[in-house]
Amino acid sequence: MTKLEKGPQGRRRGRGARERILSASQQLFRAQGINRTGMDQLCAVAQVSKRTAYQHFTGKDDLVAEYLRRFDPDIMAGVFDRTDLTPRERLLAAFEVPTSGPEELTPLCPYIAATVEIHDPQHPASQYARDYKLAIAARLAETAREAGATNPEQLGEQLALLLDGASARTRVLNAESFPTAAAIAAVLIDNALPATDRDRGSENATA
Image 1 (cartoon, helix red, strand yellow):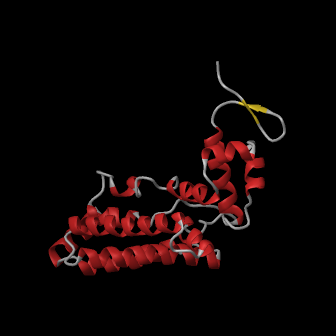
Image 2 (tube, one colour):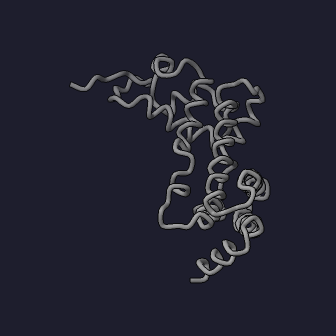
Image 3 (cartoon, helix red, strand yellow):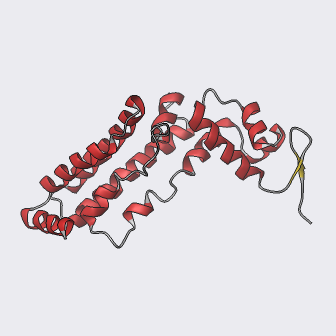
């Protein structure tokens, strides 16, 4: 028999409280920020009691760190693990963001947003955000190496910086910046490749 729990309004809920809490955190943290979201509101949206919430998470800090882990646990596997693209095409695919309506542009990168709000570099969420950003640069560098870049680490760092800049500029201006960032990335990538690899990449792009 499924074990039930009582929510804050006395409603009896089935299993899945942890997932409801995380779903509520994704909704509220992204919409109004981490600092403006209290545990009372989060529990109300998740339809769990505070006691239940603290059974799943030791506190808000623990919840924020897990919220960030849920965004991209495999480090953009949908881009970097694709076998239908050349390494150069995978580097450019990192700048492809799903098209949204004018009222729903891509929000600020959650890792940057969390770090800006939290301030404390020792906070679990800040540490996870730093690890994630380093992992993105490493995957870009690894792909750049596959593409034949003469200095893959440098190219990986340049592209990682460009991604973060596009995310921040999109949020500040409320206008898509990723197409422009992708055009800049193409120039950086091609300049980093030997002439033969560059020509081959151009041929594949126009094929």
